[in-house]
Length: 442
Image (cartoon, rainbow, N blue to C red; front, top):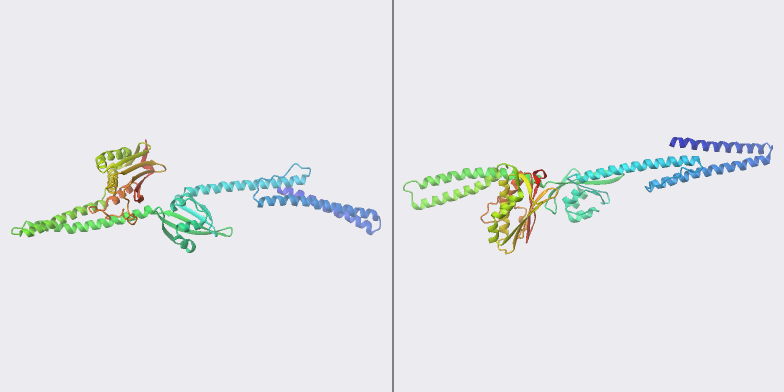
C-alpha cells in the first residue's frame, strides 16, 4: 500500500512539474520572440499558480506526516486519519499512515504481552531478582526478592542500602564474578550475585538473590554427623577397657576395700559416660523414617491428653488449632511424636514459675503446611538463638544438647524445614514447614 501511495505521489508531483515547465516555457518563449507579450505574461502567472498549488499540496502531505510522527513520538496510538475526503491522494496517504499505525499498535501490544509473560515468569522464580539503572532507580523487583530481603517495596536502591549497610560496598564495587553472603532480617542465609548489561546505551545492573539456608543446614548436619561418629567411636573404644579393667581389679582377692570403692566409682563414672556417649550416637545412626498415612491433628491432640496432668500442675493452658479441622500427613508417627513431645517439654521448661503459662500449637495450610508452636515463656537470649540447633550445645545442667538438633534432623529426613522464627521475653515461636506433597486435607 505504501508503494502504491508513493507511485501516486510521484505521478502527481511529476505532472505538476511538467505542467509548470510547459506553461512557463511557453510564456517565456512568447515573451522572448515578441509574438504575444500579454499571452506570455499570462502563461507565467498561470505557472506561478501551479507552483503555489504544488507547494500547497506538498504542505498538506508534510503536515499529515508531521502529525503522524509527533503522535509516534508521544506514543499515541489512537490517532486516526480521514480516508473519505475528496482528495484521492490524501486518502491514499491517510490509509497508509493508518495502516502503519495499526501495525505499530499490534507490535506494541505483542511487546506488552511478551513483557507481561516475562514479568509473570520472573514472579514464579523461587530466587529473587532485582534490577536498577545507573541512577540507582529500581526498574524491576520480583516478589521472591522482597520476601527474602524482608522489605515491602523498593523504589530506589538507597532503601536497601539503608536496611543493609553492608551491601553498599558490594553494590558499588562488587565484581560480577563474585558472590556475597548476607544474613537477612529473618535470619535467612542469602547468596547474592550481580551482573551488568548495556540496554539502549544505559547500564542496567541485575542482582540475583538465592536462599541457601537449607544447603548450609544440610552441610552443617552432615559435618556434625561425621564428627559425632568419630567422637563416639573413639570415646567408646577408650572407655570400654576402663570399665572392664576396673571390674576385673575390684574382683581380685586381697584387694584393699578403699581401692575397691575407688574402682567402683571409676566403673560407675565410665558407664555413665558410655550412656552419655550412646545418646550422641543416635544423632548419626538415626533410622530412616517408616512413613505411613496418619492424622497429625489427632496425634497432637493425643500428646496434649498425655501431658494434660503436667500442664495442670504447671498452670499451663494448652491450645491446639487446626485449619482445616483434620490434617493427614505421610510420615513416621513415632519419630514425629518424639519431635513434638520434645518441643512441648522445652516450652514447659521455659514456662517454669509462671502462673499464666500458655502453649499454642497451630496447624495452617496456605501454600504449604505450617506447624507453629508458640509459648509465652522467658524466651531464648539473642546470643544463643543461632546455637540452639548445634549438637551438644545446651544451657541446661542435665541436658545432653541433642534435642533440637535431633528434631531438625527428623524433620529434614521427612523433607520439611524446622527453624526458630521468633524468640523474646513472653513469646517464642518454632515453625515446621511440611512439604506440599506429604499432607492430605480432610
